[in-house]
Structures are given as structure tokens and as C-alpha cells.
Image 1 (tube, rainbow, N blue to C red):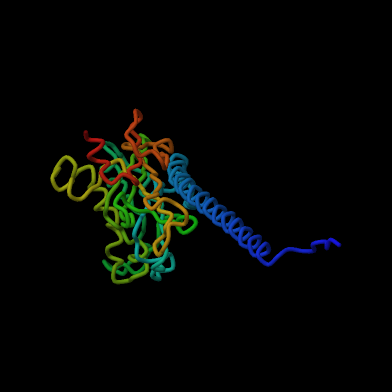
Image 2: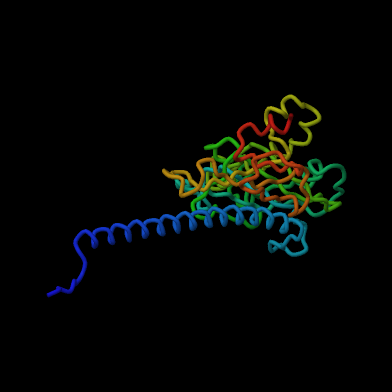
Length: 302
């Protein structure tokens, strides 16, 4: 008599469980990498759109509540590397915040010449003294709207040198008379919030933009010092998916950093470019991803 076989042997069950587990792990890992890649892409695209939106706001400035008085918005200042949060407290050490300030100045006057001189003549600044006791400042505040931007999905914005957070100032401003938009880049970190919230620094507030506004003048009057203190007019921001305290690669290549670039002499949102992540060879359009090629200056100079 033949006996019918019922069920599976222990070896068959073990093999089934093992293969199912491997298949499940493959799906989970693949999905995790796909999600990490999409988040990285979203973080880079969002940062590019953030910069473009700043240019758009400079082109179409909104009122800050002073009506048709003697106050005008001349642009935006993007500040990287500030110490203080919007409430005057220290920023968390595992986060990167980027602050955007209105550049506000006098609306009346004869503002000729280049952008730096015109802004100085307009007494342009990002903070205003609202109260004085003789020559002593007793109250200071931001001149207009302040935006606190934090990179998405835990990414950070770095210099082209890997591991170095981007620090400095980007001024996107209109000429008070002609309306021409100019981009001025400086490595100077201006701690606006520290000055506003720390009383002993209030008297510095009226000169917040002085170092940055010396940019164009220094280029012609002291070119050697200019080369030491100021970066090239084309600036590359490297979006790193690793974050400040990341331990792994989140499924991305070890050197994966997206290049978001503000072109030399950018005057509108089209001056912001999102360079393809995999563009690591010098092509005909000369848009090499400088965030993934450490010797890009030698390559482009050849």
C-alpha cells in the first residue's frame, strides 16, 4: 500500500523561510535606497527653488507695512552660519538654518553710480535702530521680514570642500534707481540675530552690511585683499544628504553631493542652476558638478 505524503519536511520549510527572508530583505533594502534617493533629490530641488524664490521676491518686492513713506525694500540678504536662532537662542548643533532678511533703505534721494554706492547712499541695512538714548542704542530689530530656511530631509549645505558647512553672505539687491538686480557674495558671516538680541552689540547694528558692501570697491581698490577675502562671483552650494551627524551613506554614493549654483552676475531666478548629480566630466556646456570632483579647478583651467 502506498502512503500519501502530507505537508513539508523540516528542510523544505527551512529553505522556504530562508529564501523568503532574503527576498524580503532585498525588497526592504531596495525600497530604502529608493526612498533615500528620492529624498536627496527632493532636498536638492527644494534648495534650488528656495534660491530662485528669493530672486523672484527681489524682482517683485512686497510692502513691509510702511506704506508709501520713505522706506523701500532693495533686496534680500541670505545669511549662512549664524550662531543665534530667531528667538535669540543658540541654534541646535545638529541643524543648519539659513536666514533671509529684507534689505531696507531710504526711498528718497539721488542714487546714481554702481550698486554698492547706491545702497550706501540709501543707508541700506537689514536691521534698524528703533530707539536711542543720546548716542546709545536702546532697541533694535530686523528691518523687514525674516525667513528661517532649514534644508529638507536632514541634508546640509556645504562648500565644495566636503565636510565644510557653507558660511557667508549672499546679497541679492536691486539698484535704487535703475532697478537692475545684482548678486554680491562674501565669506563674511553676519550674525544679525546675535546683534539684535544681545544688547552689548546693538551699536554695531547700524553697520551690518559694511563689510559686504565693500565687495565691489575692494575688487578695484585692493585686488590682492579682495582675492583673499571674497569668493568667486559664481558660487556653488553642495547639498549633502548625509546631514551633520550622519553615520552612513543612506544608500547614496559616498561622494554624492548635489551642486546648486548661482551663476556669475546672476540677475534673476534663471541664474540659479541645479547641476546634474552625475555630471562629473567636463562637457561642452561646462557645467561640471563641482561638488563631486575635488580637482574641478584644475580640470576647468586645462
